[in-house]
Length: 158
Image 1 (cartoon, one colour):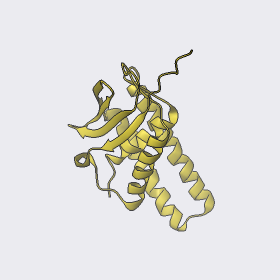
Image 2 (cartoon, one colour):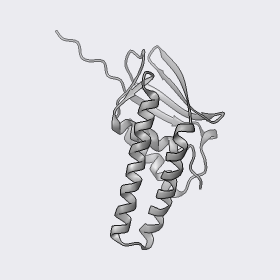
Image 3 (cartoon, one colour):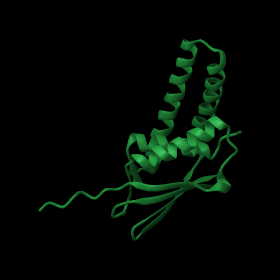
Image 4 (cartoon, one colour):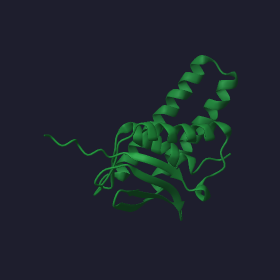
């Protein structure tokens, strides 16, 4: 009889309320959708973890991203410098603001161009997150995209 492969996944994700920046209704919606989608489907394998489900709490502590990960007989804390993310997050916010403004009165082509830029920056941020987590936590692309959305949630301006 063959053993089933060990599954590594997030069963719960939360963001430290004290770390959250004020958010617009659109941003709050994106945050909630990212958490729901993340729980529904993810690959999250912390180094040394024996298998999920894991619980992830995101926070900012002294300007660093803090990831508290717990699971069956498992607990880790990682802190990542936010410096490498600052430019991407700033640019992402600018494009998102333009995108939300464009939805109200721009042409379809303008909206599509802004959406492509927004998705490109989102991909760049999620790739950087995967790179920064290398050796600590392995994720797939979709999981890192949703985690980048939550990382942005820590920095949104209302």
